[in-house]
Amino acid sequence: MAKVKDILTSKKATRIVLWLAGALAVVALVVCITFGFSKRFSGDSSDDNRVVVDVVAGDTLSKILSNYGLTHNDINSIAATLRTKAGIGGLRANRDKIEFLRDGETGPVSKIVIIPSPWRRIELTCNEAGIWDCNSVDIQRDTRLVYRQGEILDGDSFYLAGNRAGIPAGILADVYDLLAFEMDFERDVRAGQKFSVVYEENYSEGKKVDNGSVVVVSFDALRGNVKMYRYKKSDNTIGYYDPNGNGAIKSLKRTPINNARVTSSFSTRRKHPVLGFTRAHKGVDFRAPTGTPIPSAGAGRVVARGYNRGHGNFIKIRHNGTFETLYAHLSKFVKNVKVGTVVKQGQIIGYAGATGLATGPHLHYEVIKDGKHVNPMTVKLPAINNLDATNKKSFLEYRETLDKAIEGLIKNPKAYIQM
Image (cartoon, rainbow, N blue to C red; front, side):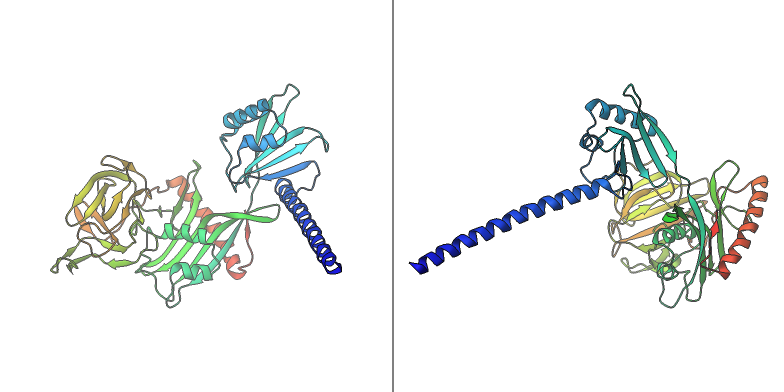
């Protein structure tokens, strides 16, 4: 009997232990949920009456406002005010934030602040009649110009050299887009070439928030130094100009696809990889996996879209009275880009493929000038948005001042120019 009693006691003790473990687990879960909820809805609150909400997937304005005790009428009034006065029709997950301020610890919400970006606040307040109104507040940026320089080493790509120089990826992409009007990054990049970039860093309350625009870019290309300055004209339009004040942005890009490798150059005599005999290759081929988006090299109007045995699926765009471009071997077209469609520079018109006479997926790109095929990599392209006499004089003064400031940054790369 003693042994049986010991066994029963042991089982009872086991049940008690399991019950306690379960109870502790429930308490821990409640604490975690409460802590997680509190963490999400309190943010970095330095005021007990202020709560910050990070908008996450599945959140709606109505849902969040309801959680803070706002009535159905309040929610409708706030939503209507945001649409009409702030241009906000909804919340964006993982981007927007909402602040709630109360009158006292238990008082009603007296102010709501929606933060759609680090540089803008939408402040909502309710008057004694229960009517909500909003005020948009632009947050002043502390903009600083920083200088980075690099050099192409053996085996480097421009991106690799830029990363090593400490240039952010987004800035590198912008620089690539600018230089693509003048350079072929597959053929023009060589070891020993030097480059530099001056770009904006935006700060708020002493903390860096994001990067701004490329202000100056310089690259020692094969055809000579390419240099561009960002400048705002008297009418507040912004463009990029060479050191003499001539428009640096060309009407066409030499390489429509960023960072694409040239697999076959323009030639008057080339052995065709499919047909086997020699004939002119009237364009440049860029390696591109099937489905790669193909942008228009310049603004213009689609004058042809179809299929033929050689080009496969192709699109032809007329840019002005002088230039046309053709894009061949596409896997498919963008549906709303048809004959007669006006396209912008950089607008996606189709996707790379291997239709027609092609040994693999790529883009065949042609430039036609006055009805004759020309080499996209060497043809002189017209600039757009040139400066008039008054703006040119102002630009040259601005460029001289900026160049002197950059000399200081070259001597002390860790310094910056306060804008």
